[in-house]
Image 1 (cartoon, each protein chain N blue to C red):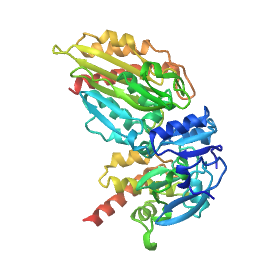
Image 2: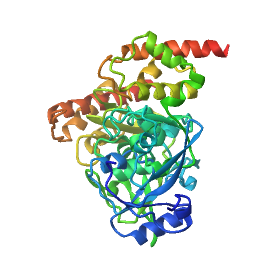
Image 3: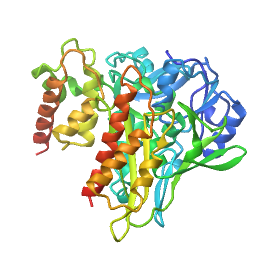
Image 4: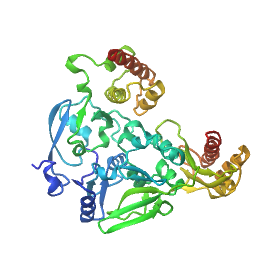
Length: 287
Length: 174
């Protein structure tokens, strides 16, 4: 048995799970699909005193669209998003990102909330949540709070969640009419962590001018980052090939990724330009 | 010894306390007694189902793939206690009635194994995919097979074998 010892309890309701986590103290962790936590346990990078199993809490498993806004429950599996054809238009990046997470068996079990709480700098859902300006609903035994995505990630594998606090839902605000989104990443093999990833969201007004462009990048910093200069350059412009090229260049120029054994910082920068360029040309062509 | 269900309304399962876990694999109940940290893979192997292989034990290689409620899971990335109440299928259950499954025959015919260590994982992965998506196209099958690692065959013969088994299974359906 590779995981370190921990006490275990399966919760039968969200309220019970929160109470159990509070009772178990600050070294307790929640486990859902386990696709990030189980490897950490096997490698003994995480040694929780208690595991509260929330994997069967169906109350956290819904995807709802209401008045143009979207809510995704913490226990929604990646495979569910991947197979949701109604996640199109403004939400297409979510579906595309989910399809790129790990491998098929991983996606069948891995959960939306789990990926966010794990906060891997190269993970897909934190990037797409950043571009789509999500707000996360976090609950604990002592209450509920809303955490904007821009304040949620604190570093690699770190979030602002307190012990005993659980992301129960991600809320995505209603986008302006005509908003579309796409997701692009590069990894050397299917299922590997991406060297770099880009989520691009934008709307076009009646004159075909770009409004509300949001570009989020992954794999290039400790947490997902926005490409503010590229966004600003697109605002009010017609999305021509040269406007897209300039935005892609600015996105790359605005980030400063570090290198590792897999890819140098300069290579990741090149990838950012390529991925943002690809995303923008898809948004030009797939109208 | 407590049963995993009994603690649901009672106390925590202590870290190194063995507990009875009701696992049903290949329609047979397994007499599992293990602490909460025991993975599903270890529970299966410790109870005689050694066809499930443990390679990396951290979710990278897929050698430990089994079916839970008909869908492939990496049994090293799941606690045995989490699998309780589910329907498990391992490679031992694939050859129903002593006759090889179409996938097993196809792996044999196409040279889709050499050392054989990864084979049970690939068989269960493919079995789960073809059950859920019987009409999966070549690219989809290729993408799904990339979940598991084979260090002998290079993967090509495995893809050919799964495509051949799919043809046979679809033919069988009429």
